[in-house]
Length: 256
Image: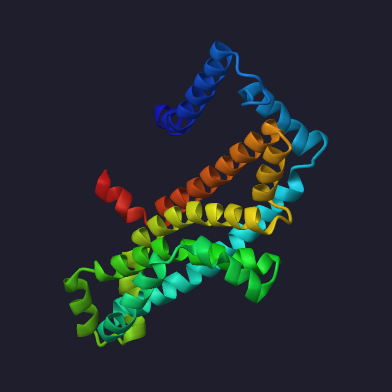
């Protein structure tokens, strides 16, 4: 019972403390809602936007859809590239500098080119999201596979395992924890990339809602959208943490 309470209360306690401090700052300095809304105004806007008027759902669903699609695309590319570069030294020597150079290019800077090539559509946002979340997942995959103990590699090679079996039954399970850690970082990057693209495109989504509301001096809606984005980021990270505990259970037993 104590363990359950600890798992439930510990993540919630900082959130409660944040809202209490937020409320106290607003009340202490008498900040009006048009400048920065209090938590009660934001909670009221969340309720009306999700349940009464339901005007926030179209924007949130668009952001979530673009983020998930881009995240899945970025994950697929990152795991494939990271695996190939980690398994084959010659490919690493050839391609790793290219990956690093491409990562150094600000993704926001190429957003106009993506729009030029793909148009003002969802696929442009998906591509930018995939590019932004690619590198942390790639690094997690590459480092995880390279960290496979040599004794395990020698054991599988002694059993005449080919490259595919060596990867699938030895390297990939060993790298699973590192890959999921990369996914946790990449999910946050994916949300940021999606919102940035929605700022630029201006055709719906949470990013468009924040920009449009701020320009209309509707700070309550703008802050509400930010809070909901934070919730999406937290929920995604929590789901990945849960998946890591279940799929890579041996790492938890090592820590305990």
